[in-house]
Image 1 (tube, rainbow, N blue to C red):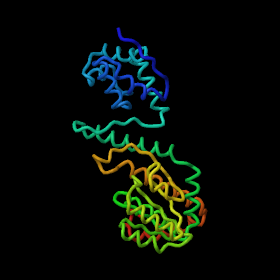
Image 2: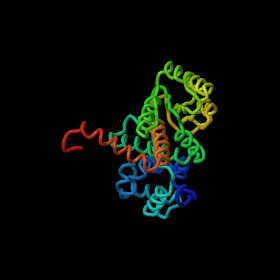
Image 3: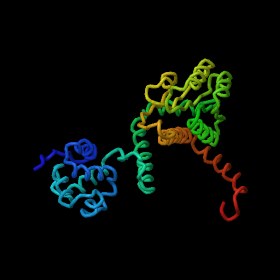
Image 4: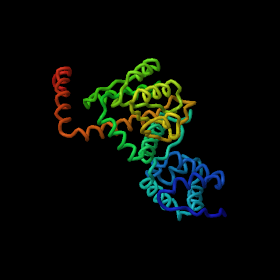
Length: 292
């Protein structure tokens, strides 16, 4: 008879399951692996469905539940539901070559949701406040980035431009290097880098600081870029950049830009609403009639 592993109740359940699986017999481990890969789907599966998908017998599923300290399959599902409801992060698994399109899509969305919630808990409200203060008072805003971060820089420029801030975005190292030398006190640079270690971007940030501009960094925790900025918005994201172009890091950067833009918009008050309405009216003629 297997020894019962004492399980927690609530948000720590999924982490407990991941660590406890190694102590389970091989057949029960297959059940645990299935539940870890698709925890949300489990809530709608019957005992027989779990057994079939894990390629084990129904008694094996029940033994697995009891080995984990549950009274049975129903108790196991209850604890899983409590954990999913209370956990600050979604559970995700890496995409595998044999995954179906549905499984792949679920994992990509799960990873994106997990990353956004991680970054939400990592951002320092005091630093966000300081960054919004700088942007709201800026004479000019320039957004620098390279590669995929250059795309985020372009998105930031578009958002700040719509708020009435004189804004530009540069994703060419030579161009933002030259632009940085022409900045003045009162200007603000938003420097974006997933790694925070790109030499060309660091050089441009140094030039911007020498010109008297303030620099806001959206970058990796403790990176060289973070150390060079007046305000650093740092994030720690678990992403394998050796396999895919960074995906969730880009989403996190975009979300941080959105937070900054909304913060600046709130500082501008009712006057902004009038300007946004005028901008919207200017676009009306460019849409198909009946779909304005």
